[in-house]
Image (cartoon, rainbow, N blue to C red; front, side, top):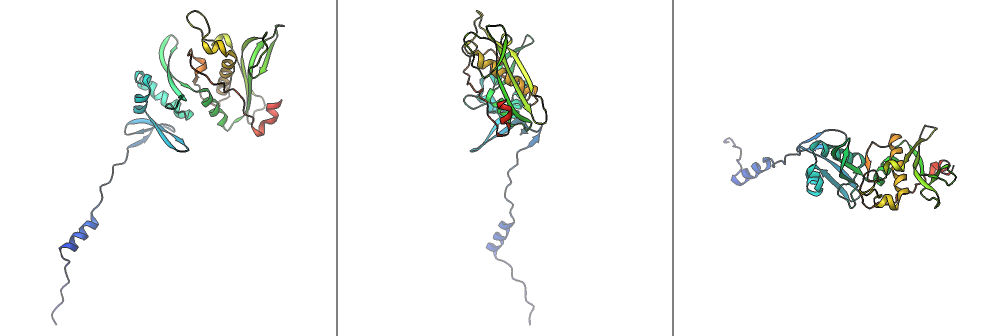
Length: 256
């Protein structure tokens, strides 16, 4: 019997075998370098992500350049500070109204551009801190008798003179609250004629309580130092967001 020789695949079968071993072209992954816990560098560009129930938004230097007019005038250091502040607070610079935005400002006589955080966003960040255990706030008024009174909220009698605002923050594990008070005269904004700008003229109590609460949250270590719009000379719409949230485990503190 003659020796049997192995069968060779025909041309078509050979082509099929070759196709099986062909490797698909792999897409080059984005070059990601983590620069800190909040910001990351993607293809050489600083950015961070905001997550919402319906998806995510990537906040990047280039997107801010396109959508925020003043952003183009900022130095790279100011841009990085802006992105970092926005990332710390989880603030959206593209929302309407924006939760964080750049504002020209004078610091020690020098012109600069600083990020301004929406008041509500700053308070929410502080209340989300695991150490937060409640707060109360209001205004300081001078009664007709000359005595000062620390009142809850913003309501005051017609004859009372508004002096400033105050806030107490209670922290878990600390028996005494962190107390902060501010003077209206140190924060009130006026125009070139010395007349208070719109919201300090119409709602000075609102301004005082917001600033006091913002400062108290910083003093308590619940949030980092940042400007809110009430501290700067800007005639822009404000929401009255000073109503307190009554936390279930803090009933005694709020009612005392």
